[in-house]
Length: 169
Length: 106
Image 1 (cartoon, rainbow over the protein chains, first blue to last red):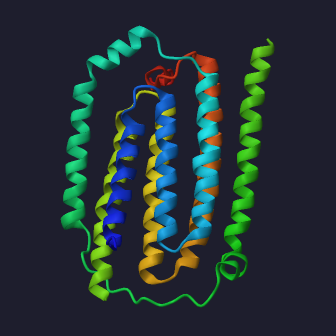
Image 2 (spheres, helix red, strand yellow):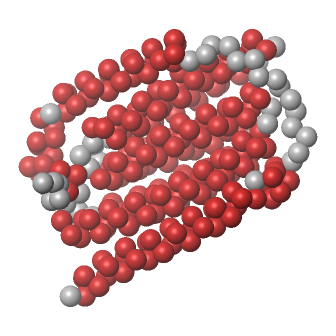
């Protein structure tokens, strides 16, 4: 028995949307971070199936691994919300989630009618390998990546230095 | 063959827009600073999927993958700096509520 690939895509995409939704509406932040990691892992499977293995490996190691570790460390460095704050948020929860239904219906409406249904893009097999494109065609991107990484490193160093000096006082 | 692919694109589009709506909702409604980062992350996932899908449909997966690699690097830096900002804000205000950040409001 051969399973239709569209059904596999449908299941994977539905699972990804459900886990992303869980990440947004989960009560505790830790559960939200873990749901986000699961969504990232499912995105990796979809990317593998769409012929993009290298980007999929990046997604799995960085988004599902590194960013989850980052979130968990931020959650552990900050305090939980107080009971009063949680009760206040619980009271207005229904009102806030009503908004979600409106946005999702608007999104589906947009997907059905706002987007071009037929795109006649030519299906050309790519002649160049990803190595060639990454190192020769998109070299400016690599330079920009180095600059952005250095900016991030200096930003984190400055921010954490402020925090540490404040703690010393 | 061509119509197969356009149908395929439209089929993915619905889920991508759903993901985008979820991330946008999180950004609009949330009161917690860490959840703002989670919403940004969901938005970036939708964009990643859209770029990979466009590469697959047009047959230029190599270009799409290089773009996605750049996107992931930028995403990680944004998340790291955002996390540092959240920690410094928490140490200053002792709270993660965005409503407490209105000190500059006139």
